[in-house]
Image (cartoon, rainbow, N blue to C red; front, side, top):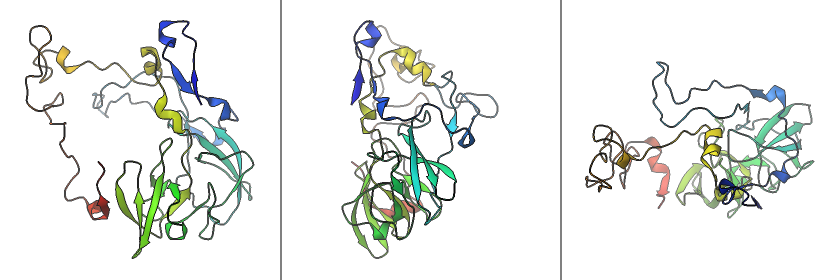
Length: 274
């Protein structure tokens, strides 16, 4: 359930948050964390290349195992944890040989659950196996695009892809965007839906909370001068003054396809997203 607050201040009136009562620990496992350098949207010269970044709370990066390549060794779920670098919850698992790793937690995973990554893994929540073994209609996440390189698709909170068909060495998947694409059926995927499905219902509530998240203010183009933006200038509230919507640098945005027509994976797309 999404957590709501009493409107004791104006900023709390619409504030909502994820209910973190499902989490089992506050402190991460130290050996699986590292501090990443904050770039604040700047390149190696110190120039801002990505706007509206900077500040934010100090956060530790949890090293997530997206490959999940420790095969045929059972593992036990130790914790369900918060990760400041992603929208989904993560889980610390303990393998039978004593090694610990972080993985993306699927919805419904509980402490002391047993999971396994294997070609012959049972079709059960959290297990990981090749796509050709997973029945049609099953929901999967953390899907490999190229075998052995780790999961690249469906890793955000609440996400899941549905298996529609298996034929001619390919698995047909419907992704969260409703795009249908082919993935080689020897590639691995995890079974279930990513945790924290209510993440999209969060209301930031106040500007200060955006600053905690490393997000700086965004100025409207229409509030700028003509030299700073194609929408700038004019007396009072002026119209856009340009036929097609554009970025600050004059690049067309609305309805303009940005995907390369020569991209190698175009042949894998059966149906484009809407």
